[in-house]
Figure (tube, rainbow, N blue to C red):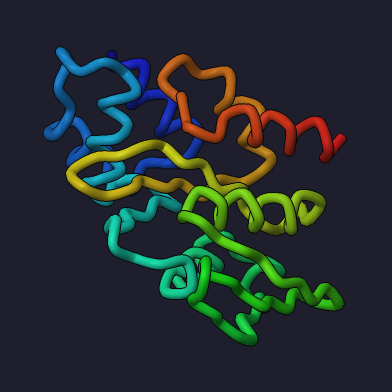
Length: 167
């Protein structure tokens, strides 16, 4: 399992290698160890999001973690009925998104910035301690990360699709 920590260090995704080694449990399955590290705040680009948080409340922290052009993402209007609807502005793009959950919001953001090389992709790592664990990762590192056996995000197919669209 040391390969998990070594791989994360090589990809520059660990904030504190020493703390990660202390929290690491060899008996954990690799993807669970990754969730544990994410929950502890030890992953660069990691976000822990409580289940009660709505997409419009997550815009600031998430677009900041995505970086690049995503930092200029604007939320123009929010409607709550019948489903959450966000009116967004990103550069010249103005759209209305119906958002059922945070996973749908992540999908829309990844799709919106799929061609922007300066914007990190968002991986939905899964649930841990009543929170959703997200990881914003450079697209240049994403292809390598997708090859790692410990990296099993819920939106794996969408992330792989981002890689094929970027080529």
